[in-house]
Length: 402
Image (cartoon, helix red, strand yellow):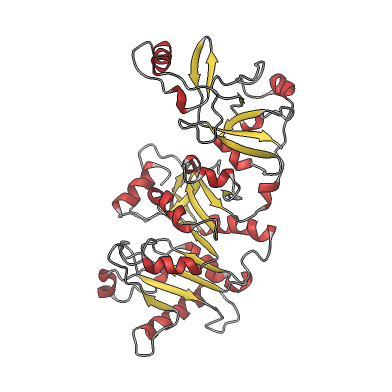
């Protein structure tokens, strides 16, 4: 997903990456801490592939009563290589596994199924095993049912009519969607109509379908700091790149670290309202730990009425104009401290450009920088004047202090 290993795994449909319980617990706990009733009386939909295997399902099933859920819905995906093997629920019928039947689980209550005085995932598993027996009998099951798909989508595809109907019932959608379908998935979720908590590639911030939601405070980054990346559980036959040097196993489970991954949500959490500690412009120039800032003046863009701020911790506390900051700023964005105005990009979607470079200027800038003929797309980003020549900066979000 966020790196080539994850992208290829999803493309080939031969390897599966699963979000670890610990990552889910760390993230969800932040919402509970901010609002203990955030999930109370809510219907949660988990429309990821293989939800029976998914730790999302296990986690919310175990905490069903703790969080006061109204309903928990999970769907499996028909083309998954391990459908029906999750939670050891459907592994007793080899013919059924080969058929690749997709299931839907709808929980409206959970209890201590084995009456041992402790409620845990084993109780959920045993209850579902019993429901499976009902499903395949004349009695039928109110918890488990097959998904049939439609003429356009295989059973369990989030875009199918069946799963879309479940979406319309849901208050909150939680999952780790395929990154290649992230734009389409987020459009399908309709975050203006319901809550969402999903994992995505950090670069998705810049998507034209996603950034306006962030700008208008309809979507933001989750509670977990994304600087360290995220570990995912992977199958035992997963093959690492030769250059891989991170942990390969956690608590006996094979894992793979994926950098540049973050949570996207519109659920409130406390870190979102923590003010960013800042120094004055003069103190940044004098004391900054960054050589690009220390002993240098803040440069102004040639194509935006804004100054270039290359690091989030270098945002000046006493500057009231527009600033271009890295997209990683959004990990520390406090809507009570800053306003997001737009982004430096090719199309002037937010009417903030003050200059559009000509084709000839782009040719000249390329020759000046690389000493050969070509085109330097100056209009795709903020541009500063460096040693007498035009220089593009990395992707920048344009903000202003409130």
